[in-house]
Amino acid sequence: MKPAPTSDPTRISSKAALFYLAVCIVLIGLNLRTLFSSFSAILPEITSATGMPAALVGALTTVPVLLLGVCAPAAPALGRRFGAERVILAAMVILTLGLAARGLGAAAALLAGTIACGAAIAVVNVLLPSLVKRDFQHRLGAMSGLYTGAICASAALGAGFTHPVYAATGSWQFGLFFWTLPAAVVVLLFAPLALRRRPAGISKVVGGPSVWRSHTAWQVTIFMVLQAMMSFSVFAWLAPILRERGIDGGTAGLMVAVSILLQVAGSFMAPAIAARCYEQRGINLMIALLTGGGFALSIFGPLELIWLWIAMLGIGQGSMTALALTMIVLRTRDAATASHLSGMMQGVGYGVGSSGTLLVGVLHEETGSFTAAGVMFLIVGVLGAVFGFRAGRRRFVGEEV
Image 1: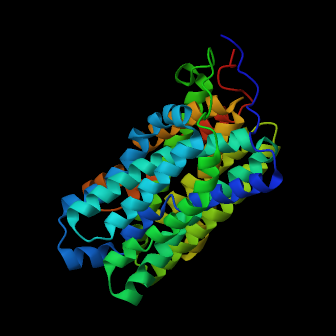
Image 2: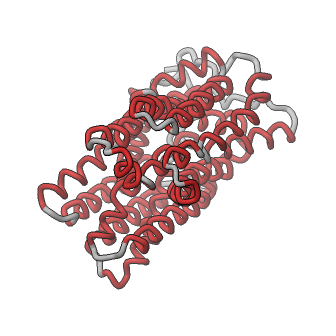
């Protein structure tokens, strides 16, 4: 096997242009989760107004998560063929159109828009880390924290502002359409930079390492699977879990919002700390246990300490999500390998990790409570600690031997 090449040099010569790219990356991240949290925020109002069947509700909540896994493997090839920036720009245009279609109100437009958004987000998810790896070698920890924090903040924005927009306008359609506006702004800001770049994107490394045959790549990927199982379960099930424990709807909503805000804090801090460490074994292990423990204790821990459990879950989940994504840039030598690892771990990670929300629902239906799901999250946390510990060793994809 040929040794992996050194990191690709940035193609941006001026500090102003590099700063502008950093701002665009953060703004793009702020649009990558509103799809998921905005719909659930006003789901009762939508079903009440439309009589939407349960099958369609299930499709609208499950299909976009599955598409994150299904479409991710295509992103590296698209980036090489057309240029990473141009592919991201095209995906953001599709995301904007998809968000607009959701606001039309018709069931067919709602489903088509959701599918388009899920596919677009999958592509952007994969290519953003490769841009960070290529252009921000000198600030890997800071930039990883910024864009993963922006992604977590995106979920908080969708959850926190969709219902107020609905309440102010009386229109659930506009509550969904509203998120077209920030996406369109990002398209306008990013277009001059993306279109000015030459079409050559992240180069293909001839004879480079195969991520699918790399032990390190699989350890990072399984770490991603386990964090995704918990991450999307927070969005889907944390509020019902809290309400089943006797907490009123308003307080449960506040707790979910606080948890997501703490995710943002964790996602900013963890990558910066991890990038300064020689290895990331210890931080990966501790954060995985904190996340699994916080989730389990939110289900069956003493209710008097529920705010503590929510804080543990929020900080842990945000940090674990950010660490999984940061492993992409810390376990690879060049942007091309980072792009392939990103496609592999997000394709498998989101595809398999989406089973977490399904398993919670099945366990609740079979047992009549969320206790079994709490045990499941304890197991997921322990497994996350094991694979996070192994993924955190100072090894690079293709250089294990």
